[in-house]
Length: 443
Image (cartoon, rainbow, N blue to C red; front, side, top):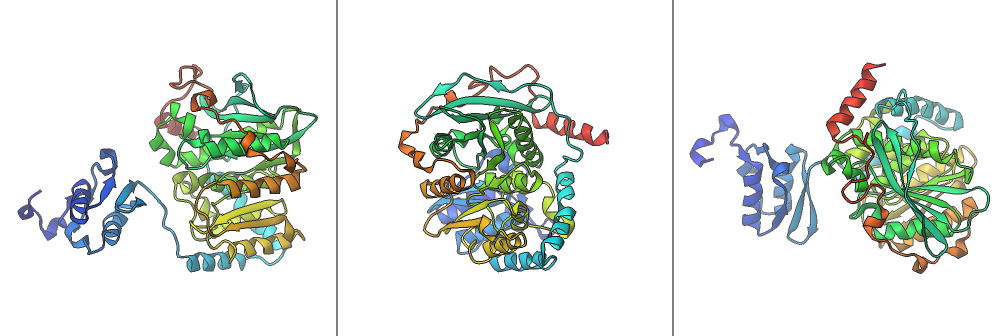
């Protein structure tokens, strides 16, 4: 588009792609983006948005489009399609204080929960709950390691929709043992990551069953759905249903102790951990890691894509985390993300809710101010100690050096290219959307 062709009647539009290329040239930076991300997008009054500072310029250009960039390193940015607005910490604390003013004892808190909980299920499109398929889990062969075994498993949660994961168990199982659901967050290499394997294998060596599973359209789930589908609203519904269906299955097993069922995930899987615990009382212990904050509700539609935070006049993830009371709960926070202020306000709020039940010591916070957003060794050690104490597991069995790191293809249920997918496997977000519409029409 030439300068002569632009005018105030048309708001001086310029394609987003051209604007980003101009920013790269003017500020000598690299901006990673795909053609699909910028296709059809224009920036009004584009030239008026430029400033001396590249970060301020990017903010001015992208915010009206509900987009942002992540700064990967100095001079290198990556365009991100979507993220909910982060509050200032003080604003988040003020909102949490507003919520806290609604209750002052166990009775008033239980009344508040009774208002929110049915709304959560409705917002998630899980009220009524979709019919459960009658199929049995699909297992691969068992792989033997030092003190534990691994077996891949897929479970049909909706007709043709499968949740995939790896089941870690102690080599010797005697009687009923704890179950730890271990969803994986938004990290590179999904559940195939080294730290994810280490965590689940160590939990197994300690005497529990740990099921490591993918988020929707993440990891092996991308055999059925595209990566872009993870950033759509139904990802939140399917992920929540995944956990509910997993509990339905595992609690039929004779080797699972229903009184020792826990869930622990980090980052986006930490938000998932809180939501599942709030909805399902079969969870007896929860440990959201580097996830929960009163001023950030999750940057992905799989965390906030459906209107759960609008329930009962508005809620947030810290209030939802309080639903766990008086069940044991561990929050692991760090100084390098939105959990940096957890000990100042969010954790005392949770302690207060737990005190309504005389269980203030049942909620814990391990804060690592010098660490960043990951599920690193100190965060894992905090989890091991917490579950060992509450589920009577063997903390002396913790030795991460005894874990064998498997290659990605060994951990898949359906093969690298989906060659082992069942014949009824659903593919494509449109089909999933149509299925949920059919449920809505059947009400």
